[in-house]
Length: 230
Image (cartoon, rainbow, N blue to C red; front, side, top):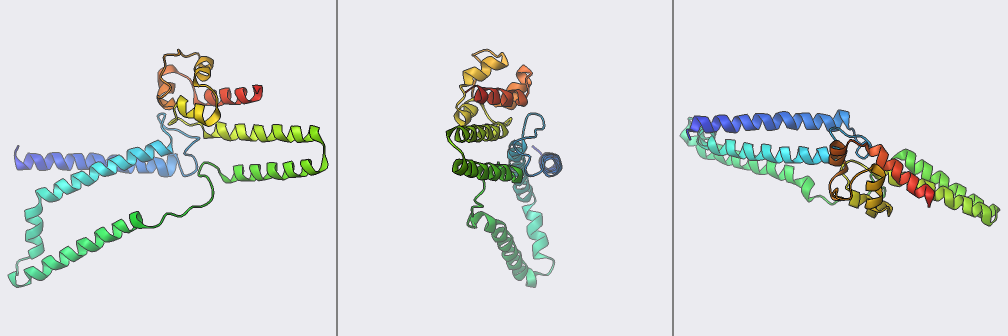
């Protein structure tokens, strides 16, 4: 393959990767902002899944950049050396040092210690307030009323727990994931959706939704109905 043709292909792939990097980044920034990762979807994919797409596009772009540098290495060395041979050595050393510094700065976040916030990323501020209110109500009722009121408090806890589980259901999950999360048999969900038992429970909900024409909210409603019937 001619060098000019190879350069053209590498640059074209780099342009496509960069365009989709910008597109997926804009989706995560404006269409599916932080906090919407488990409630909103685009094309059956939530913010978490779009993050995977964005990452792999970035990897492709990195490979293209490396290929571009390799193809233009002679030109890069020539420009770095400059026209004055007496200063070529110092210019090359400066370029090497600058490259090492940039790579080191880029690697620092990867080597940093990871801290814990103490909060689950799936629980927003409103959920924390709701849970806190339920805890206060439970404490008050247990100290002031009898067994009947304590039973009512248990029902409230179960409803809140069920609401949390429904909120956790999103398009990137599988029916097996939902079974583990909620304790509801995947076969029961398939039956309620009117789907064949031969449907794979390891397929993502987003893909099943597109293939069989149901909505994620229907799955959440099945989970809610199941917990209410317990």
